[in-house]
Amino acid sequence: MTINQIQDEIVEEFGVFTEWLDKYAYLIELGKNLAPYNDKRKVEQNLIQGCQSRVWLDAELVNGKIMYTADSDAIITKGIISLLVRVFSNQTPQNIINAKVTFTDKIGLRENLSPTRANGLLSMLKQIKLYAIAFAAKTEN
Image (cartoon, rainbow, N blue to C red; front, side):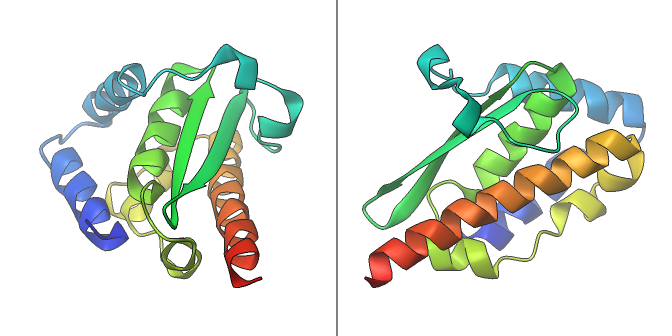
């Protein structure tokens, strides 16, 4: 699936909820289903700066596609990072670099987050793109 197709799928999933409390509950559920993150990888270099809660993000290039793994110590944030991992994992570095993130606005996520969580979301997106830029540079050389 393309990044846009996955984003559309997420928008559709969140579209069944009319109340933000229900969307938060769904976000928490998504966080609970995030693939386990190896505690040995919970090191300073994998910690995303700019997040109020602690968020670890790691990436590896497998057959030309980036695989992200992540975790957070906050339940809502864990749900948010699980969505980002879903959107961007198994994509090429160039597709990630060129991607426009639309689902966060379409589901109302950005406007329903506290300012500190919204900044955290931007920090997570920035780190995902930085990994993609780094892997793209490695594959060009």
